[in-house]
Length: 419
Ligand SMILES: NC(=O)c1ccc[n+]([C@@H]2O[C@H](COP(=O)([O-])OP(=O)(O)OC[C@H]3O[C@@H](n4cnc5c(N)ncnc54)[C@H](O)[C@@H]3O)[C@@H](O)[C@H]2O)c1
Image 1 (tube, rainbow, N blue to C red):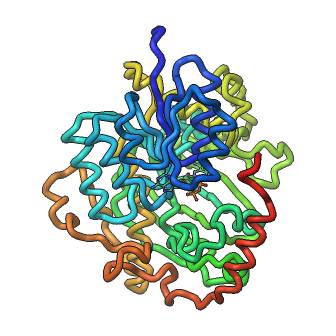
Image 2 (cartoon, rainbow, N blue to C red; image 1 turned 45 degrees about the vertical axis):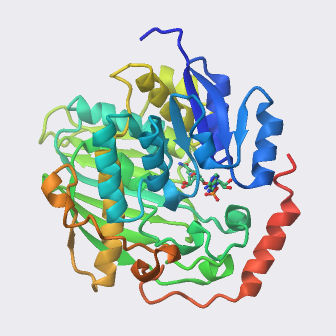
């Protein structure tokens, strides 16, 4: 679609949020109008970078009074739902960074706020916009893979070297208290977005606590695995964590007409999520095809290739802004799909806590299902008080304050807010 109008965007959180701010500065369809961060050094860094034409706020409620079309939420991952609800109650459309919610109570409130206000809520699962995941979706939707039978997603990220900068030595930073299962959408997201199928059941398997997580001051398991059943009976294995020894971002789908997968981390191409292997039969039952390196270098990849996460960050923002401007074809992830990506992890942790029992995954599209969950505030955020679960199923590990003090000192030595 063609329009000369620019969407006016405000961003909360100027860490990761800088990616979306940079988008607005670079691309013609958006304008960065306001930035909010309640940590003064972060706000000052943003002011130096983005200049005085933009309004700066240290208070979220005051920020919400600013005239803008949409708010990008890049604040703490476990606070997105209450912030998204306040935005929509104030008449603002929302793009939420991961995660969408941290409890079922928040999930019900978020769904009902989207329905009541009729505003655009989009979930910023950027991995769905990586070239390999986009191409898989196109192929699946065109029928080239046949029926979805099995998928695997991995988002393994050894975060140890940067953990001080990510958590500032705060024992209660969300990254230190979150269950390994909650941060599941980077890998589960593409499985849902490719297949369009709803997850219905999950069993969780939690890796044992390790020395790396102890050194990081992180209280959850280093990684977790979910085995998920989709509504057509297909299976997905999803693996994610911040404490493995090596990184892997990888997606694989077996359809009835073959397999597509992105490149493994150690693949010779070294292009991982920008690379896609296809091994597809023309007709179901052929089983004759050879794998080929599919071309992901299309116009979209070329347009956004320079941006973060294999071009996914700008591609996601572009689609969100286009939808805001009225393009109904723009690819956005709505609140129901966001929950289909997140709830497998949420219920996998419940499964682990129940000794490995499979758990049904609720469908909050159905208003009748909501009452069962309306008052369920359980999550691993210590601020949840009596509803707080341990971050690790066998109980929170004991981590001395000296670990956090050392991480804080390491973070301060980076002078990362002096840029
Ligand atoms: N999709 C991705 O690839 C990706 C990558 C990194 C981070 N993230 C997500 O981005 C979000 C932010 O992560 P981060 O790495 O920047 O770290 P973070 O969560 O520690 O930082 C969030 C920023 O928000 C600010 N903030 C927190 N509460 C606020 C409030 N009440 N009012 C105003 N500002 C507030 C903080 O001061 C900080 O600058 C998280 O949700 C995370 O999951 C996504």
